[in-house]
Length: 270
Ligand code: FPP
Image (tube, rainbow, N blue to C red; front, side):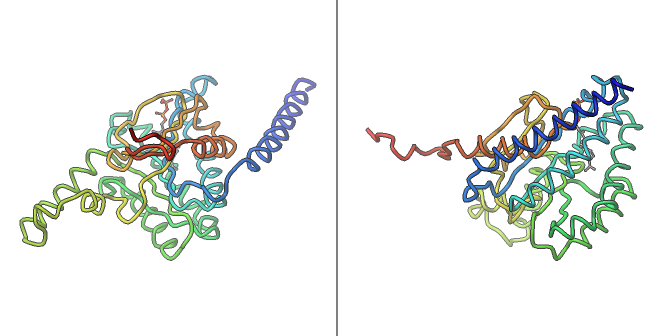
């Protein structure tokens, strides 16, 4: 009993400390240079659960809590687009039980959150080969898209059955079809045309990519769109990732010198 009270007290102290740290960090944030588009590879759910002796399911469930917090934070920070990698074209290789759990969590998330997402002005925008998802997921996504269609705040790109290569292949096919039909000439194909045929058409490319869990891979995520994106990695597992980490990432991003292949402002030219 005493140990339990001590643990709860420690948790309360940690939470209070986190809130104080977050307040300090928020003061360092330059509100005029908030990234327009943030992309996140929500990684580490399985390891988070395993390190606690729990089945992987618990990691995914805890990961949904992180998603809730980060969506709210991005909305409050007036970020235009948040893209989260929720299920890749390669994730079908996982055991059927885990796939079903992930799809059930998605359906549950959409039904539970849609009211609050709409209150915050969030527009749900699934991206990927959605037609290959289970019927229950397709139905829940249609509901969320329909309910949030008119919202003008944060665009939440949910990458589901998403693969960067598959996305580029689809774009190439659509462009070739237009060329064949005489609606587009080969000479007209440039990077704008390619961008317009991606799932993220009309959106700015990500300014910042966040990958939790200590891995340093792109994992077939937004291969075209990440060309000039700033990367930020952390060993924190996704289920432990909270707005304090997000704000840290943005502050770090604000300190970067983005040159897009050019030179720094004060660089000597000769
Ligand atoms: C990667 O962790 C995570 C996923 C494959 C799924 C991400 C899903 C969620 C955060 C929750 C459900 C999503 C929605 C939209 C409700 P991993 O399982 O590969 O972890 P590991 O690398 O530690 O094994």
